[in-house]
Image (cartoon, rainbow over all chains, first blue to last red; front, side, top):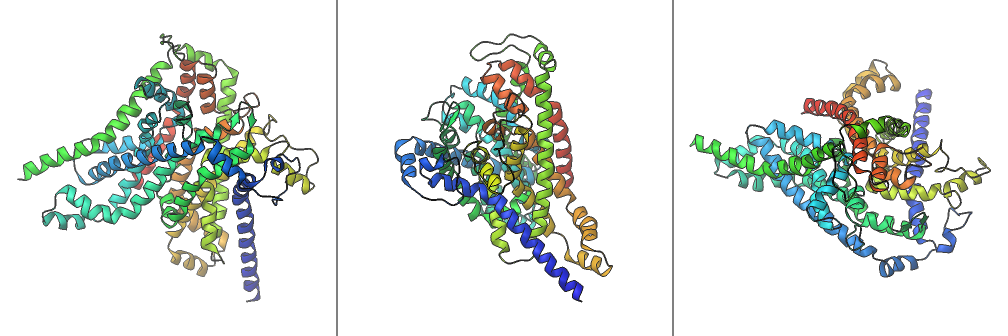
Length: 279
Length: 292
């Protein structure tokens, strides 16, 4: 009896030990990013940086908002990420539903192609995509990104939605169909309300994927008026010198929307990650 | 009646799948085929391509830097995935237990995944800084080092440093995939094992691991593909340096295309790893098809 009590204490100790070490490891970089963003410049460049801030200032956030074009980059990101998420979701909802419920030749082939293109790496595609976008006359234009982003959002959304739709019992739809609903009405009135939480998670991930995208944005856009937030952040690096204060401040600002979205939908997200994952 | 119904299903089916087909076969497929073709040319930015056969491939295969970059890519994704799996598993086992504040801890563990890869890369680059970085300062305070560690400029250390960054950001993906898998395991299995006298280690290997093997397989596969193609992290943290000590295929491709202006050749670098990626994809699609 005594040994089992001892074992329980040892187990609890081990759990708390891992939790504490894990939290320090997980949160320290985030803390350091936020701390740097609030530190006056002369203290950032101190060869003996202190763990606890000696002095905090919001002055630099004002500089970021009023003296740089960063908020323009943020609004470009909202525009590109928002639109490409909406377009991709519409395409994916109709497409996935048809692939699950309608019988037509070639649908297995399409399903397989979706999985393969979900795995298709940007590293292979970014140069030809750049060539394609230039040919369309959309080089150095944020609209070019609206052409490219669905190429990774649509396969991801379809991949997730296929399994959501499949898990909805077909009997629900049959009842509606007997009552005279058309396919589209069934989708609108029966499927979408049931799948709404799942769709919300997929939308969250799709939005963050395009919000965080870096490589295509780097290749396609070059003038500040067209660039998104990720490129805006990277532009606080001039050749080899990094403006660390600005880099960390803009990083904090750009992280806020995605972190809030994740925290709001976290109870769904936990299941969603297990379902198939997102970059 | 039935006949027309089936016909309208066909029309509706193809009409609603058409946009997906356009995205996959036109917007991805055409550039992909074009990339394969351009890898056989001497294309540079602004100039029209001339067909030169397999010369680009011959040149890169004869270049020792290419092989070093390829080996780096393998070291990068394998080490990365192994550490993410092990640490993610330990964290998942921990937060699957009952303890005070568990739900808050779970949410906090998710944070690195919500932050973009490029923000993570920049933050770590700042922490690694030789002169002003906090990491060296902490190690000095602890009395572990006397001279600062050149995290990003030491040829042997640079690759390790970028791997640490990607492990940091990728652990939550493993953690929550594995946790999701563990939560579907029937508790009675563990009770039966306990009655039979199996200890926790035995239970872990005989019940937990077999039950979540398919989750582990999918998570590992996806993560391998992403790490194999990772660009943001290495490009921003080390730029592939010093020399090519931490360069991987994606970064090498980018530098060749946009800094050396050798587009055709850079595409042969990207193209040369397609067979490797096809192996990944083959296992992945088989795995997913089995799961359906």
